[in-house]
Image 1 (cartoon, rainbow, N blue to C red):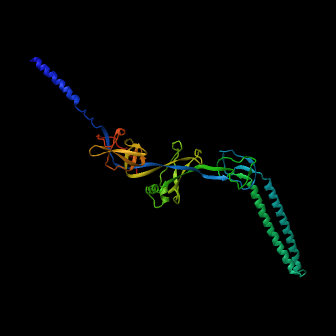
Image 2 (tube, helix red, strand yellow; image 1 turned 90 degrees about the horizontal axis):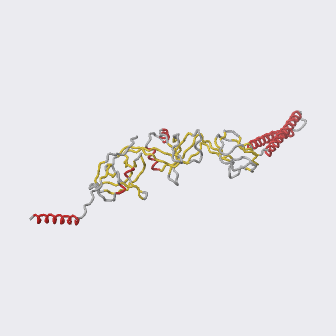
Image 3 (cartoon, rainbow, N blue to C red; image 1 turned 135 degrees about the vertical axis):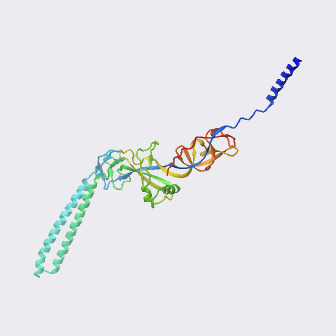
Length: 380
């Protein structure tokens, strides 16, 4: 009897183990992932716009007269002061022109003296009726011609002096010299296509950037003032981001908005002025203007809760049945570690915070309320 019981027990174990092997494997439980409810808040985003930098004065130095370039007194990149001599053009032909003009002036002055003497001689003779009045009138006419010849000769002397002065090319402003394409001994002319050099006054620099029509309207609406000039006075300082992505140490001030939009690009040009006492910035530099824009009731999504695919940004929203949906969103800016969202999600929607790289559209999850909230900067 005992053997029968033991045999039955062993048989039951064998049959039970066979039954377990034939059962289908159970599905793994849905993953537990943190979920965040989207809210709106007031925030500030930093928008960056490409900028072109110019000196407050950028001038081309060109010769006003033709001649051989005798001397070059500066080197490329040198700092020069206003009035400093830069180039010297051969002055000998122009000095001879001045001497010729002076000789003509002296001859005209002598002719006037003769004309005055003739008038003085004829005046008493006409009064005594020794000679006719006609001769005196002719002498007075010659006197006026001689006086006019003097004025003409003086003008020629003045013109010759100006041309002689043009042989000494000076700096119209203080600043930095550019390239020197012309070398000593070159023949230069006022009609040359290429300038002698360029001169840039960069004690302050202008950074020009453009805003599209929508950005410009939003930009204007943020600041109080009855006119655009009043709004400009209340604009906050702006930051210049250099080509190496570092921030220029001095902030700038927006002080000019162009009078009209560019018909080709649909954008309007804005100018910001930056101090440049150390000469770090030069004309021709490029960079980006970082402009802070305020947004009321903005929808923010942490960047960590997004995934980028084919130049598009997606989040995983959680439905009532805890199934996720891959949703494209439209990003219009950044605020700290958050994206500013225009379309795709709304306030109250729930999104998955982490583990999204392994999620599939339509997959079920077990939501876990996230304690991590978006860091929002409330600014007005």
